[in-house]
Image (cartoon, rainbow, N blue to C red; front, side, top):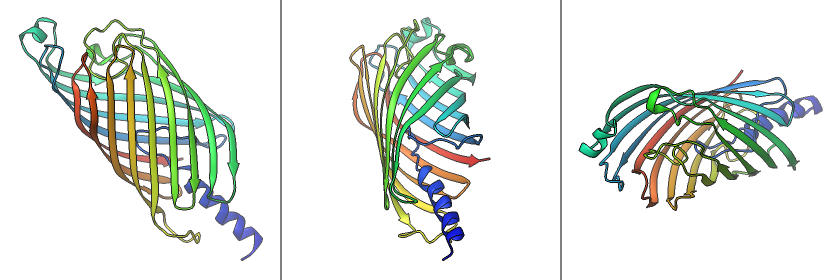
Length: 280
């Protein structure tokens, strides 16, 4: 194999390994300098077992549009806007507060900056990376689909790829500055949220890269936990599948609850997500 061909293979495989992002968990990966990537994700979540006395049962569908830009090799920016359709059933107490019915429109626009401050590559595929990120949720959503507040957050994430195995471990904190006393999801109300996210990826195919594959298939398992300063605790597990090619990826994930100790909002019963990512 010529040296030039080897370099091309290593570059292309590094692109596959660097894109090992799971659905619900951040990763210490980002576009290269001057590159754009986009993602579209369709999600459904069922909320029920409302302990607040409002009897809420919610079916929420979200289409998330995300655009990433690599400012430098290690710094990137992400803009995301969700489009939400929400059907809410409630009791008389909830209706008295103006809850219930159908809401549809844009959710809050979120801007994120990420800085990868450490990277150690041991081969064209094996890598370890650390990144810090900060985000800002803006009160730009439609009506009750917005938190009506500027909610800043920060966090850090580790990504490791070794052979057929990938790992992402993230922790983040969101400051909730709003006044909504009846939130639906963590971080939407008056209480801050501390999140711990973990994902493990195992490459099903190919067993070894040769540079001739059209892509790679992974099985994914995620755990996403959140603690709110009002004492609510939630733990979700999410199995999924991921297909990654050199310039696009497709994914599916199912969310199931492990722990739901919440007193200030409905429980998340289950959810599912489908996504497509594209490198421009």
